[in-house]
Amino acid sequence: MRIAVLGVGLIGGSVGMAVRRFVAGAEVVGHGRDPARVERARELGAIDAVAGTLEEALDGAEVCFACAPVGALPDQVGAALAAAGEDCVVTDVGSTKRQLVAAIDDPRFVGGHPIAGAETAGVEHARAELFQGAVWYLTPTERTGGLLYERLHRLLKQIGAKPAAVDPETHDRLVAVFSHLPHVLANVLVRHAAGPLLEQGEALRQVGPSFRDASRVAGANTAMWADVYRSNSEAVAAEARRFARSLEEVAELLESGGDVAAWNDDAREARRRLLEADLTGRPVHELRLTVPNRPGIVASVALALGRAGVNIVDLTLAPASDMLTGAMTLWIAGDGEAARATELIGELGFPVAEL
Image (cartoon, rainbow, N blue to C red; front, side, top):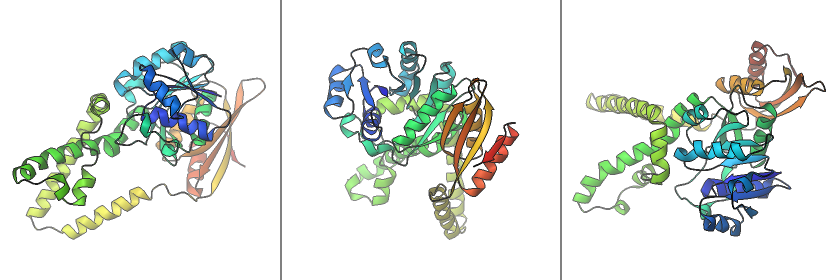
């Protein structure tokens, strides 16, 4: 399998390293605007070969990862699709999806976003294990080719990620809460604290560990995050206002002498539920369903389960000899989730059986 990586920084470099380590027989070809940086990626083992042009990188590729900053992704993805073959799935790693998916109308494109990264940037910080156990959101549409989606899903599983289908609007609302808002809050916190601390001659090394932890991502990679804030401004602004209302409620609780112990205990319990919401070790059920062989079927099934919180551990597709129908096999973790998946698939009108 030939994999093209366009942009070999932290994420692109880690994709290349992961594929080279965990996918037998794969060849990773890298391309970027700065040939010296791409050559450095080859020296560090992130890619097998350097492509001088985008067309060279896509020649014979079965999967392409577009790893440009969010603001440059529509052009990069469009150029990749223009150079790619009909049997190549093109995906991206951007942290916002709504604008990009709306701009790209091609059955070979599947929007993607790995929930992994670091405050550092550059291929020097890339590592093959970056995606181990990480959720990797995918945003298929009704036009998405089923076999191409399956190929991408399987590749992500091979490099240790947990693919999860979600629609672009839901994705952007989710990341506004758990990814973008924390960066906003870290920026606000350090700006809020800087005046009083510096006026009193204090420095960050003299403050407590809680401040260090809460401010860790403040000012992260401006070139990347400025694009992120702009592309998801509506959702981030809504969450910032909702958070501001929560702060007002805390202020009122403190001023009124309310039950701050209960408030603190509730926060601890909420954090526990969030962290334990996707524990592994549950039984895996194998479901087989018969579907018509047309674009969008895989996306409709994956998104219906994703909206209900049912994650697909793995999937395979097997078109019938007449190419009119096909068998889709899903592996679902958890007894309740498998029962819910069976119900939802039935509501879509597809016969399903557990093997």
